[in-house]
Image 1 (cartoon, rainbow, N blue to C red):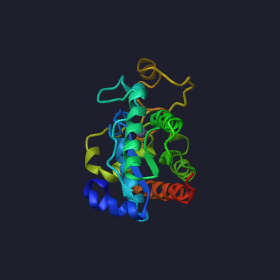
Image 2 (image 1 turned 45 degrees about the horizontal axis):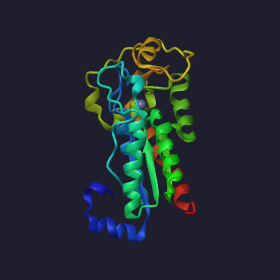
Image 3 (image 1 turned 120 degrees about the horizontal axis):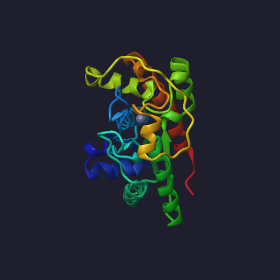
Image 4 (image 1 turned 45 degrees about the vertical axis):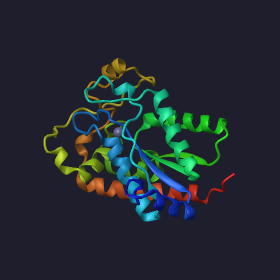
Length: 245
Ligand SMILES: [Zn+2]
């Protein structure tokens, strides 16, 4: 069930029965020469919508832009500052709370969003807002990490991973027609986090972070998407069972 396809009357009926909504969030940022700029919101949206379908929960429109300052050295990246991202999450959450949603679950495809989203939740709680606000990052869930390790071993890396690129390849095969296929060296570099956009480009010149995105396939994508959906459902179920204070 997609919020964008309902009328307000239908939202009222939904709220008479349920109090949960899923919001996919991602990023618009470089994913090396091998992956799509939209990787993070495409994966999060697809997982959130599948979870919504299977659990019969409402899914809000995707927030594609995220906190991607460290990727600004690469063309096409669009970032919100951490402050703006926190404010956007606060405003979305507050709007949904105003209508009676009580469990607001962000389904996340991008690591850089986690701290500013949690910052938003902390601020909302400090302001006395009631309800459960949480963020589920599909790529950090144990079963997904295990599958990635099984498929790609030490070539999964931390950014432009073959896992996320596989999902997008499965969902949008046409977008990969002109992407490179050659293999490169995979290095596990040591660095302090965070990095500025200049530092990031110096340490990771082609935008990969210890990953081998050329290993991505549609077949793996289907497999990882299913595992990510299943693992996310398990997390969402925990939130559904949680008593409201
Ligand atoms: Zn990504």
